Image (cartoon, rainbow over all chains, first blue to last red; front, side, top):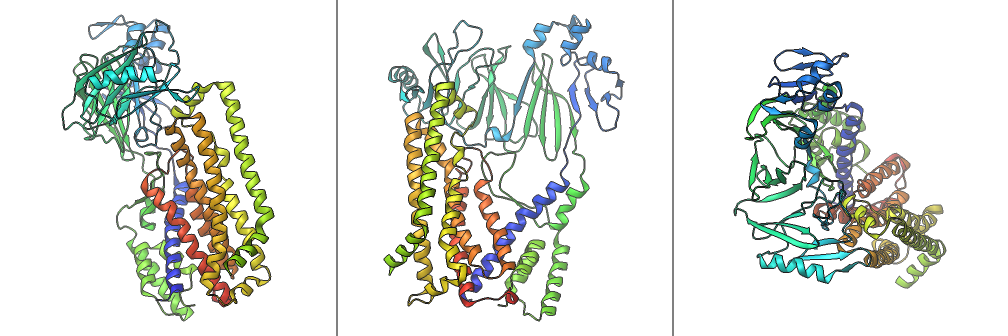
Length: 408
Length: 228
């Protein structure tokens, strides 16, 4: 094969790559539609999922038992979600399921936790912040430094002059080393926001799978250690610092389990989630004092589990399938795979080839025959690599072959 | 002969390329002046916070500069060659055409690499003065695809410019736009830090060089429109 011919094949391949990116993208832009699921919340009153159905023009409020509700009735069966409205209307019950209710109590126990795969799959600057956890003030104050975790411990840096604060760094590192810390850490979980109820510091898992809780109390280091089991591989720690102080945050592990770090001696308590993958699923926990609504969402649908808040066992679940988009689904009959460089699941640039079966094979065969007819009409000889290219890549190969003349 | 080739390219590009270099230096000076202003207004700690936790990139003015620098150098070097088929004179010199093209491209690559190393060096030194090494490396990784786009813009301009047939030129432009798009897909800082992305960043300029040789070959043998 001549050099120029080789370059022609290189152009052919590049054009195939270009079409495999551009054509599916255009198809997506033309056919894409929003995927929405009904708002769903587990009722602590009638012990069933209640949802707002937007599918018809009229908004319908229903529950899984087949009842339909008015706006006001819906508020009253979901007092843990609409407690503020009920309180304004004077309809907030004094007690529910044997527990006293008040706006303050509900607010203390409610929390929303959101997780997306891109929370983990992203490039990040590994500098963290430690606020004073006992400042005695309502609002947290900026600490005036950031820190990095090193092999020997901690290094605090002053942003004003970009220099390491030797004294403070030594103080923290000394305690960590004394407790047997071995850096660099596998995972560090810190909440950099100053807009939180209180500060619980950072959680660090080191090379020896030791779990450290590090915070600043009255300007001095506070470090506690807990040994984790050898086979436990944490991938992400999300500090929560919720008002009820039941737990410090959530830990995601390599086996797609989620735990909360209990404030009771750092016990890891598993959250029941039968189907979850930290790389593919979005997660939303809407919790109240009775039930946690744990919703996991992928492109294949949304599943919501009602989890008993006290014992953390699943009491009910509901699954929604996404609405079928016929035009979008038709793409698998045209395109033999689609190339993409970015996705909502990751902030990294990653080349991915999506493949959805062999539905395109009939179009590929048709295009191959069509190309041969065109060659005969042009009185040109066929080239085997081009024919193989068209057979394998269908419309991409066909269009690319039309743009290049392999004869001259 | 090499000296003569380099001198020829130097004569063609020196004035305008000097302007491109000056614009680059002014751009960097402006970015650092603006950074200084932001430090004064928002404070060091706040700005560090914005960079670390809000994924803010403070040197985004630089984004398209390397691409334009590469493209302009390509235009300065190759447009005079293709007008009135002047490159045919060079290609008839007693040297292999691949070597002639190699000298021409080397001049451009060396000029661009010197410019980009200079700008990256200033960025590195300036950023290292204000920010921790984690931020500096994140920033250099963010600008890496942009500098690669400069080299690629240069090669791909030559690839499109030397193509003798207009229909094919359009195909080349589309292909070049697609290859260049790779460098600007995302604005997220250090999004190209995975090895697979860095490999693609390196492969695209190599493809660009190969394509230039192919276009010049077609130009030399005088491919006509009917041949596509």
